[in-house]
Length: 184
Image (tube, rainbow, N blue to C red; front, side, top):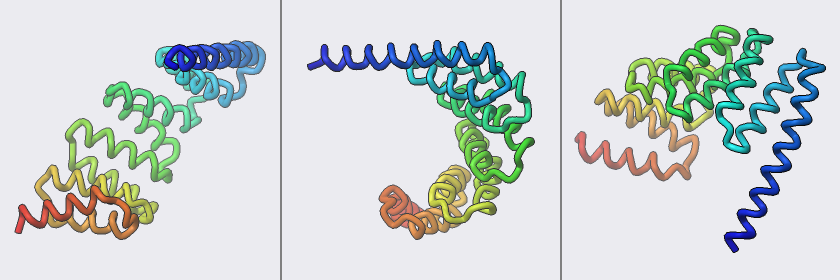
């Protein structure tokens, strides 16, 4: 069974590498399209070639410095690699290009949270909520940051709002119960 799974993964990797070769040929002729670099970066990620993905995104940033989605993708990769400072720089760049994108603030809030800069995380989660107050995760994460700053009543309010938006969010129910019990 394991052998057949490994064989299948190897075949998939070969197919991805063929796609990479195809797109690399296109880039040499049509390097005016940021989408080619993005596709190559995604393909590199499929075969766990993080350095290769970042290489293509770095090249894309040089050629297309006003394309916010390139910075966003680079930030996501760096965040997963726990390079929070690098992720922060890229999200700041994406926000500078498009300050109306709620997701960039949310992701930057996650970076600040990971850096334990909870007040900045709360600011960014709040900004994301200003743009879109229908996402339960925005309230949930802001509640987590508020809890880390011992702002328990505000945290409970955020978790309750998260639960209102997504009644299936069991973790929010558990946290509310815990906070009410320990802070009464």
